[in-house]
Length: 213
Length: 332
Image (cartoon, rainbow over all chains, first blue to last red; front, side, top):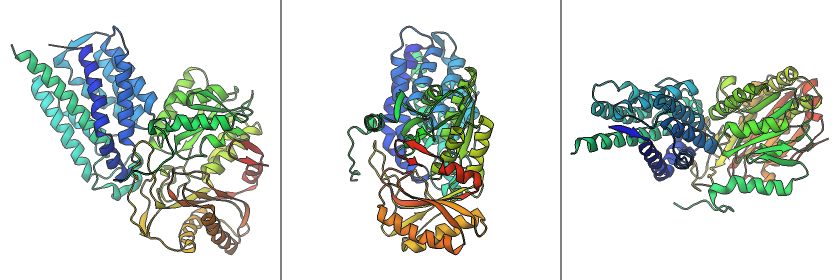
C-alpha cells in the first residue's frame, strides 16, 4: 500500500475543516493562558495550506509539503506559522521528491515534524507546548507494525496534550505566568493532538482498506 | 454568549481594510510596499540605517503610526495580535534599506522573534545585514529583564533609535542606542475590561465587574494579580512604586512620561492618572522633560492604561526631542 499525493491533499483538506470546526474552542482555551488567538491562527494557517496544496498540479509529496509550509507561514506568522512551516518542510524532506511513499513509512512523518518544531522553537518536551503532543507521539513509534505504531502515536499525542494541564509553561507567551499557567491545557498541544489524531486515523483507514479484499 | 459590537465588515478582512483606510488618510506619509509592508515616503535614504518595526495589529497607532521621517522607516503588519510572517518583514526591509544596514525593533514575543529571525536569515542570503533589538519594558511580565514583554515603552524606545538613525549614526551606534533606550524604559499597566478579536468577537478573558488585572499584557495576557478596582490615585501609586523601584533614579534626574490608554479608557481618566503621576515624580525630585498622554499602544477595545517612564540622560533627551513626522505622531 502506498501513500500518494491524493492522500496528502485529502489530509490537508481534512486539517483545514478540523481546525475550522475547533477554532472557537481553541481560542477559548488560549484565552485562559495566552492571547486567545490560537484557533484563528490554526484555522487560517490550515485553510491556506489546503488552498496551496489544492492549487498544485502534477507534483511530488515534497512539493505538497513545501507549498503547505509556505501557505501556512504567510497566512499566519505568529508562533504557529514558523513552527508548522518548519514541521512541514521537514516532513517534505522525509517524503522526498516522489509521488508516493510506502504506507509503512508514513508514521516517520510525525517524527520529522516533531524534530522541526523542537529545532525552530528551541524547545524540549515538558515546557507546555505543542511539542508535548508531537514528541511523545514520535517517541511511541517503532512498536513493530504499522497498526501498532499508529495506535501508539495517536494515544501518546492525546495523553501528552492532556498532561500539559499539570505543567508550568517555561517557554513562549504563557511562560510569563509561571505557576498561574498550571491547571489549563496548552492550546498548541491540544491542536497538535487533533492533527496527529486525524493523520493517524487516515493512515489506519488506508491500512484497513488494504486488508479488505 | 453575546458578541462584542464592532464596526467591522468580515472580521477576517479587518487588518487589510484598516490598511486601506490608513493609506487613504495618510498618503502624504506612507506608501504600501507590499500587502502587509508600509514604508515612510520621506524616511529611508541612501547611507542611513533603516529602522524596521512591526508586530501584530490591534495596537494602533502602533506600529504603522510610528513610520515616518525621524522615526521608523518601515513596518511589517501582522494579523490581529499575531507576528507578521517573514515575507512582509523582508518586504519592509528591502523597501527601506539604504545600504547601511537594517535594525529590526519589536516587542519580545516568541512568535515575533521566530518570524523576524527567519526574515533576517533570508536577508543575509541577499547580502543585507539585519540586526535585532527587542523591547522588554513591561516590568510586570517577569523579574528577568531579558524575558519581559515589549509594550507601550516602544514609543520612546523606537523614537530614540529612529532619531539616532536619522542623525546618520552607524548600525553599531543605532543598535547600541536602541539597547540603551530599552534598558532605561519601564512600563506597567492595568486592565479594567477585556478586548475581543474581530474574528471571534468574544472577550478574550473574564474580568468580573469591580475587578482590575494589574500588570496585564497588551494582548490580554494575565498580569501579576487580580484585585478590586481602586481609586485612580491608589492604582497610580501601585504602578509608580514598582516603576520607581525598578528605575533607581537620583533626585534631579529627568524622565519622559507616557500615560497610555489601552483603547477604551477616555482621555479624562488618563489625565487624572497623570495628575497623580506628576505628584509622585515631583515628590521624588524627578524632572519631567516630556509627557505624552493618549492612545499610543492599544489592545483593541480593552479598558485600562499603562504608565511608561523613560529615564533620560543627555543622549536620550536629545534623541527624544529630535523632530519626527509620522502619520500618527509628530515631534518638533
